[in-house]
Amino acid sequence: MSDSQAAIRAEALESLLVEKGLLDTNDIDAVIEMYNERVGPMNGARVVAKAWRDTQFKSRLMTDATSAIEEFEFEGGEVQKLVVVENTDEVHNLVVCTLCSCYPWAVLGLPPKWYKDPAYRSRVVREPRVVLTEFGVQLLPSKKVRVWDSSAEIRYMVLPQQPQTWLGLDEEALASKITRDSMIGG
Image (cartoon, rainbow, N blue to C red):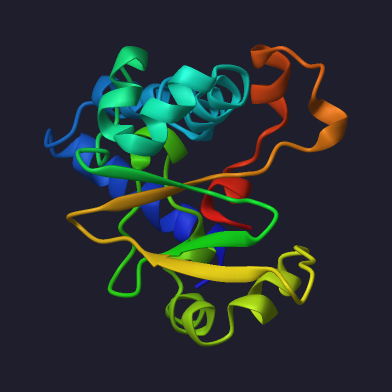
C-alpha cells in the first residue's frame, strides 16, 4: 500500500468514526498538535545539545538517562528506562528493535517507517555496516559497530559525536542541526 493510499484510508476511517460519534475532531487535533509541537526528535536534539555543552548533565545522562531527562518534562512516554549510548572515535552505536518497533517516543517522536520494517530489523543485526552505508554513514574499517536491541523494558538513544565544525554553536543552534536518524545511529 502506498503512502497516498494509506492517507486516503486513514481519512475515510477518521470521517466514519467522527460521523458515528466515536471520535471527536478536537481529540484528533490535540494528538496531532502534541506530536508536531511537544513530542518528537526536537526533544532528543535538545538532550544531545545539552550533553555536548554541559559535562555534568552528560555524566548524569550516561549514568541514568531516564532521571537526567526528567528536567525537560517531555510528553509522549516510552522513556521509563532510557539508556543513552555514546558514539566515540572507536565505536559507532546503532539502535534497532528486533521484535517490533520499541522506540523512545518522548525524545524521538514517532518511529520512522523504515525502523519498523522487518527487512531493516533483521539486516541491521546481520550486516550493520552495509545498512549504515546505505544510510550514507561512512565508517572507518577500524571503528567497531555496536547494535543495541530496544525492547519494552529498555529503550535506547544514541548520543552522536559532535562535528568539529559545530564546536562554537550554542545549545539552540546545535539542537536545530541534530537529526532523528543520528540519535538512532544513522
